Image (cartoon, rainbow, N blue to C red; front, side, top):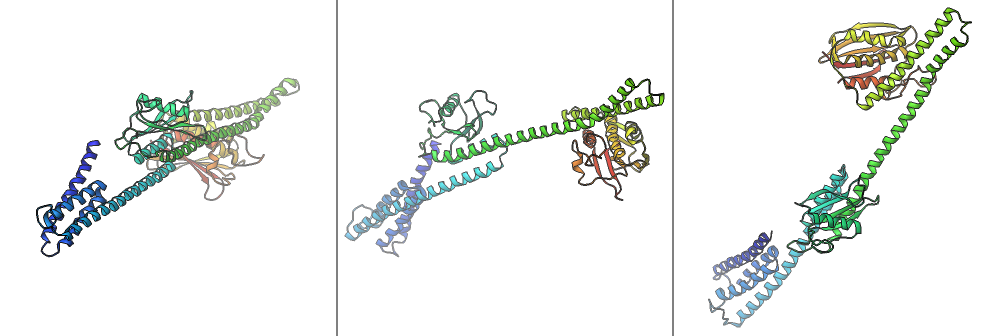
Amino acid sequence: MTKISEARRLGGYGLALAMVAGATVLAMALREQAGVANLSLVFVLPVVVAAVAFGWGPALTAAVSGVAAYNFFLVPPLYTFRVADPANAWALGLLTLVGAIASGVAAQSRRRALAAQAGADQAGAVQELARTLMGAADREAVALACAEALARLFGAPAVVLAEGPESVEPGTLEPLALAGGAALAGADREAARWALASRLPTRGGAYPVSEAAFDFWPVVTRRRQGAVLGVAISGGETGRPAQPERLVEVVGAYLAVALDREALAAEVLEARVEMAGERLKGDLLAAVSHDLKTPLSSVLFSLQSLRTFEAEHDAATRAQLLALAETETARLGRLVEDLLDTNRLDAGAVRPQAGPRAAADLIAAALDQAAPALAGRRVETEAGGGARSLRVDAGLFESALAKVLENAGRYGPEGSRVLIRTGGDGDHGWIEVEDEGPGFAGAVEPLFGRFTRGVAGDGRPPGLGLGLSIARGFMTAMGGRIEAGNREDGVGARVRLIAPAA
């Protein structure tokens, strides 16, 4: 970097002398057409150009060399530095004054232009940082945007360190982002820890860690998160910038806000998860307290009646009470099984073993499982065109289809028809269940949630409201899907289970 800057500086002086040489040749060519005094204006041009392009030094060099060339080649006696005519002496003096003033004004304009350009670059870097932070999704993205902004603002390596979210010991820093070719040494980490602990900035190569290469500034957010910004500016060839704190504080403020926003978003998400868990617990408790209490009460009543009034019950009454206890025990078992299936889906413990299964066999097995709920309903099967076999896990698919059939039996009135259709299209086959119940009163998608019932009020059929949720979970695990809606004639609902064809 030093060699490049030195070459650029020397190049400015060389180009200034070259422009003076060109002006001299031009003036000698115009000597016959213009007066000598007028030719002095030709040498003002290299002074102005050198001042604007290269600064004060090359401009002054162009002014002095221009006066010398003008005197040597154009002012009589030629090819000497003596001046015979006083008028020419005044012309030389005026040229020197004009050159000095022009070089000073042009150099000042150049400095202001460079300062304005630097300010515009800084403003652009800050604006770009703000835009980037708006879309940053995590701490690493936030830190990288800030480190890159610092590297652009100062043209030097930059780093962002922060306390880990799970840090047990306060002041433990980890580098989140490096930019501009930054590399941290042990001394730099020590200086960063000192800056955060003391809440004071440090300077590279100075107390308290003289071996550190970076200047560090501490950043403490409103939510008590600690971070440190580092820039390697103290050892640069151009020296440490004047008042770098202003720019660093701007970036630090953006960093603090972004870190707090990320922490707040994490807390909000955690709170939402906790609220969802509490709501799920409440729903589960409400469902269990109502739907599990009824079969337990029925079983307890039957057993107590058989025991207390054993001598007074005839054979038919005892058989009726035993049948009631058996039916309610089976219902209780299905409710517990639904809860266990829901837990399996939550834990990701469903591992399908897919294979070709005939649609008729799947329907027959599901009808056996749903037989109690379908009692008193007419079940009909209608085979359509397309796939006759599905590539599914038999146990999972039969359970999902049984859940749909149980819903059809629960919501369909006594004596109504439950129609089972099969078919396929392309690479998928399906089994569809239609009932003659009330259908879906509103949007269908919410009914696939847990503990959601299709009918509100005390007159709704018994159950936990897990059937469709479990069915969708099983179908999704097998690479299939489930669709639901009302029948086209408006009487009843239809639910279709779609799976890959065998």
